[in-house]
Amino acid sequence: MTGDLRHLAWLNPETIATAATTTAADAAAGTAFLFTGAFEDLGDAAESLLAMNKVTNALIGIGKSRAELGANINALKASADSLADLADRYESNASAIGDSDYATESAKLATAQIVSQAATAMLAQANAQKGTVLALLK
Image (cartoon, rainbow, N blue to C red):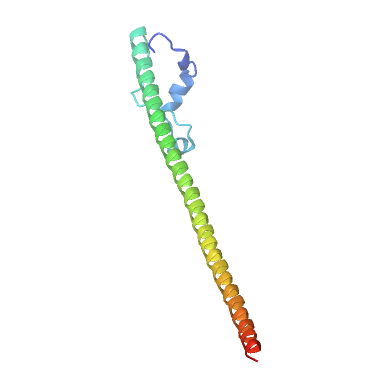
């Protein structure tokens, strides 16, 4: 970054002059100047380079902080997506269990109806045979 200082094009003497008078309201509004070094006379090239290095280091620190925040946001999004997927699978499984219970009970009902109908048919045949035996005895 030392050779390329185009990213410092926004830095002008007015900004430096007003940075010393940045208020808490400016900081809350996000318009505060983030340079924390002392404001010195930038009379010669060495002092100017030192000031630019301080600003560059501050910008690098801001970039690292933004990267950390981005990584944390991505981790939170991944956790939220995972929890949403887990909730969907839970609902799907609960529905499948409900469907399975309904199918089991339906099978039990069908079995009971078949047994009942078979018993009724057997009783009817027994009653018919009783009449046939009585007719033969006569």
